[in-house]
Each structure stands twice: as C-alpha cells, then as structure tokens.
Amino acid sequence: MRRSFRSLLLVLVVLAVGLVVWRIASGPEIPVGQAGLRDMNTFRLYGQTVTLDAPARVAVEAVGSVGATDTLEATAWLLDAASRRTVWAMDAKPGKRLAGTLVRTSDTLDLPAGTYELYFSTLGTSRRGRSLVDRVFSREAQWRNDAGRWYVTLATVGGGTLSSERLNDERLVTGRLAENASDVGDDSTLLWRARSAHDENTATFLAADSAVLRLDVLGLPTMSVVVKDDDDRVVWELDRSALAPVERGFVSGSLRVPLPAGTYRMDFDPDGAGPGDWPRHPPLDPGAWGLKATAEQGRLVRFDPFTSLTKVVNIQANRGSGRWTVPFEVLRETRVVVAAMGEITSQDNAYDTGGLYGQDGSTVWELTYDDSGEAGGVSKNRKAVRTLTLAPGHYEARFHTDDSHHYEGWNSESSAPDHPERWGISVFAFQPEDVRVGQASAQASSESSAASASSGDVLAAIENVRNDDDDEVRFVLDEAGMVQVRAAAEEDGDDVWITNAQGATVWTIESEPAKDGWRIASTQLELPAGEYTAHVRADGSKAAVTFAKETGRPRSEYGIRVTRVK
Image (cartoon, rainbow, N blue to C red; front, side, top):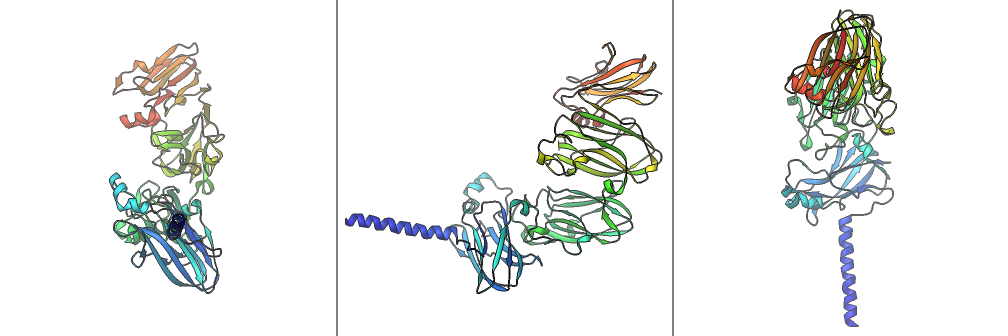
C-alpha cells in the first residue's frame, strides 16, 4: 500500500511539473477583450490590428527566440497606425532566458487611445546561404524547433479596453494592416503603389507640362527603379547611394524626379522580396515597403491609353487557336501606344502573344515575358503598355492564341486577368489622322481560310510558329504572277511548303540549303492563277523562340509569309 501511495505521489508530481513546464512554454491564454498572437510557425509574418478605446497603461509580454549571435530570430513589435512610429519592440537583452533559445520580455507602456498594429515575425535574420550542416547542427536548428511556444500578449492595467482583429495572409500580403496607414499626404496625389514582385511592376505616366514626380522607396539595397521616355531612353535611374540605411539591413529614401512634358514608363524591380516573399524580418513598418509614386508638382497623372487616347487598331483575341492580323499605314512620323495582354509562362514559352511588325516582316515590338508585368488572376497572365515612335510606312498588328486559357475559356474562374476584354493587342494614336487602318483578317488554326490580294499585299502568313503547331492558310491568285516567299524552319523535324488546288507541292523549304541546323528561304516563284495553300508543321522541339536565340533573327520570321510581287 505504501509503495502504491509513493507511485501515485510520483505520478502526481511528474504531472504537476509537466503542467508547469507546458504552461511556461505555451504562454498565457489571451483573455477576451485583450490582444495578442500565438500558435505561430516558422518563416512567417503575423499581424493584428489593435484598438485602444481610451488612454491606458498596457502590459506587454512576449516569448521569442534568439539565434547564434543572440539576435532575435522570432520577435514582436507594436506600431502606431497613424504616425507609423514604433512604440514598442522586443529586446533580447533585458529579457529572461528560458530553456534553450527561448527568451521572454515583459514591459509596461503608457499608450494614448488609437489604432495600433501588432506584428510577430518568425522569418529570422537571414534565410540565405545556409548549408545543410548549418541548418541541422547550428543554433538556427534550435530556434526553429521553438515554433508553437512563441506568443505576444497586450493587456490593459487599471482601465481602457483593447479590441483586436487578427489579419489573414491576404491582408498581410498587401503590406498594410490599417487603411491608408502608409499613404502620406493627399490621396489625390498618389499615382502608383508597388509593394512586391507579385504587384504590377510597370506604370505609365503622362506629364501634361513640366512636372516633378516624388518617389518614396523602402527595400533591399539591390532594388532598382528606372524611368524611360517615349523612345525607350532612360531619363532617370535610382542612385542607390542616395538611399539611407534603416533597421534590419534595408534602405529607404525620398527622391524627386523632374519630368518634361511627355509620357513615361517606370519599371520597379524589388529584387524578388516583399510582402508574401520576405527574405528575412521585414522593416518595422512593413506597409512602407516598396515604392510609392506621388505627383509633387505639375499636372502628372497615371496614363491609361484605353481611356486617354483614340484606339486605331483593336485585336480582341476572343477564342482559342486563333490568329489575327490588322494591317495599317502610318502617313507621317507619329507616336502610338501599344497595349497587349496574353498568356506567357517564361521567356521561352509564349502561348497567347503578338506584336507589331513591319511590312518586310521585321519586328517593331513584341509582347514578351521580360518586357511585361502580371495582369491579374494568375502569374502567366502578362500585359505591357509601350509608347513607340513609328516612321511612315506599312505595318501589321498580329496576335495568336493556343487552344486553352483564353477570353472565352479561362483555365478557371479565378485565373482570368483583371481586364479580360483587353486580351489581345490594341494600338492607340496621339494623332489618329496620321494612321490609316486596312482590312483585318483572322483564321482559326484548325480551319482553312482563303485570301485574295492585289499587288504588293500579303497573301498568306503563318509566323512565330510554336512547338507542335500544324497550320495551313489558303490564298488565291486572281492572275498569274510572281510571289515572294520568306520562310524559316528547323533542318530536321519542321516542314514548310506550298500546294496547289490539286494538292501538288509547288514549293518546299526542303529545296533550300541548311546552315547551322536551320533552313532560311527568301525566294520568288512564278505561279499561275489559282488557289494555293501554305503549310507549316512543327515538331516538339526548337521552333520560333530557339530560332531567334540561335540566329539572332526575329522569331516572327519562323514560318512562312507569301506576298505578291509588284
């Protein structure tokens, strides 16, 4: 009996000790009407808006973790939402060390009534350049195991009531917890806000007269900002030496950019960091992260050609497996804006795309991955707005789509871009009278279409060919004459040829010599009047993108173009 009593007593002691250890490790419960964060994992940023209804003394308690150099790898801080001032931040030095790398801090604050932002970061001071051995055996491995025991609590002492709202990931990714928290000054002057690599990284501005653009930036020392004019010339570039270092290894600054009258494009590269992709602990004011552009002087506005200019060419790519061409003539040198939106997953994989081309097939501008930004929905939706100066001459706007993810059939409801009606390419003119638009043509890849043309017109075109494309275009010669054939294909695996109405081959690229794995043709044929079909068949390798890389020629040339010789 005595042994049983001792055993029971031992069990009770062990349970009591375990309960105390668990209570210390897990932290206090957060009472109703108070505020706090708990149940946190590694490499995340957590946030909460906190409202204090009256001036009060507030007790703060937090448990975080320190790393190999006694720096806080899991830490908390409190921000005044109105002034953006840090009113409290966890400090490891006066903290009470717990087991291992855990550290606890207790403070008392006298706070006025207002709204605050409470943050807890478990991102650490650095996540880059660590070897597997470091991650397994270093002190980092220890503090990472502290997850689940971190917390921060706020409780009023002798008056005042706290209310709070824990922020979900979507609110945190915006980089701002309280409304208008990071926008300083008159909201009407705010032109653009870019916070991360997931935001639109390009904006276009119109200065009606001489103006001054103000830029407020906060980010990594490697971020970049470039402003270009109508002719794609750099008129201003961020001088990183003008930025001041701030906490946690970031830099910030307020800069003024004088701009003469004109249209400008600004490109912002945050170097892959920002809300949703922090490389380490964020700045104490995460909402100030990124770039904010405001109009400081003069008439300076965001420029949207869809509402600001006359549209002279419009290709709305409203179906899959389609190709559209709109010819137009520029009567005198003029400025135009081209806006395009399509599906591009990388520089080597463009599924729905297009561009502007000269009558000789030369590329004036193309929608590419590197020269575009995200268009909303999913990351493969890409868009670009560019201002170009065109010399007098004949041009074509072209666009093509594949058989999935297009205007009438997105991969999913949530994958549609922000402006699905802009899927395709449009050209806007500052002086519409300087542009004369011809007759548009369109065909589906799976269908045949016939075109007749007068002297000098394009009879058939299948260009910018992609892997596994198998297309044909019919054309008609009303009278016998010479035609110019320009074509390109891979030496082995891709075929380009022309047949007559009886199906006989009248020309094939196989008759052209091969060089460095490619066949490139520019030849003239004399054909009798009649109906013909241009064919292109590509295998599953190389095609237009690889052709452009290896030959230095525009990828639009890959395929075939037939024109009537004048």
